[in-house]
Image (tube, rainbow, N blue to C red; front, side, top):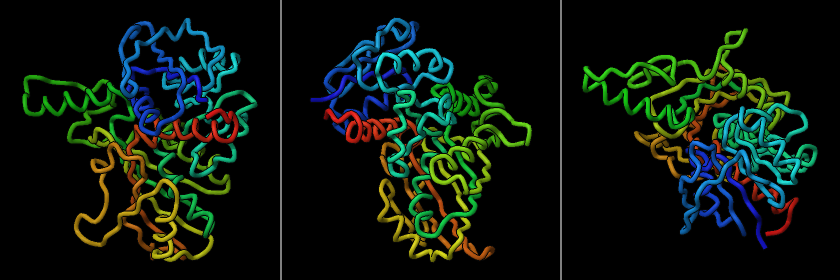
Length: 340
């Protein structure tokens, strides 16, 4: 016996990826409903060998449905998630709306799956920010061994993190470089993204950090350990899919780079590719379509007593969004709903 599953926002990048991953991982779906806004009503999406037409999110009745995967943004989630939850359908939300709510668990299954039982407070589970999700997968096994004091992270985030409009803008601006008469001014981003990097993701806050940077700080504390200090610089780069991060970690206890490499090789969700030779590391282009979070460039930081550096790469549409949501659904089914 399987589940009655809803995917809300099924026509977007993340929604389509959710459908792909539900099929790839053979999640026990007995019945599927795909929802979209009225402007996308009737659009066809695929789930395995079947094709489904989107239904109207605004009029959909969630009564009797088990799990709803939401990929519709915070504004729409604010309206529809409480309706679904009140109807008895557990919402797994990809937006930022509920991530910082103390009554809503923020889950990365490889890191804090035990916290999922708290979903009963509101019938909602939050999916973390894409840049946080891949980093905490790498941090948790190292934290368990040597206790992390402080993390300094610089991100190199692909345009797909800004949705289809971000990908289109990079594509159009790249073409315009070779056709000077076809000017494409910035619209989705603050400055030209083609052949450029932009040290701003989301809005600026009073202390000079951006909201994306703030998210990484707060979410890491909620998911891993509130005692960890985190400082982040988040940068948008002209890559279509795949987020990269340069992570510097300071521990309470000494952790040798070889032991760290062994720990990460055994950790769930991680693939270590770390050869000290030209090309002996993973780039974002190589991780697209993969489930794993890839770790490379593991090395001691000699400038502090107990420090390591590493390079972390993942497909942000998968582990950073759709895959993590489906993994949450799997844990929910195995531990709480127990149908499949």
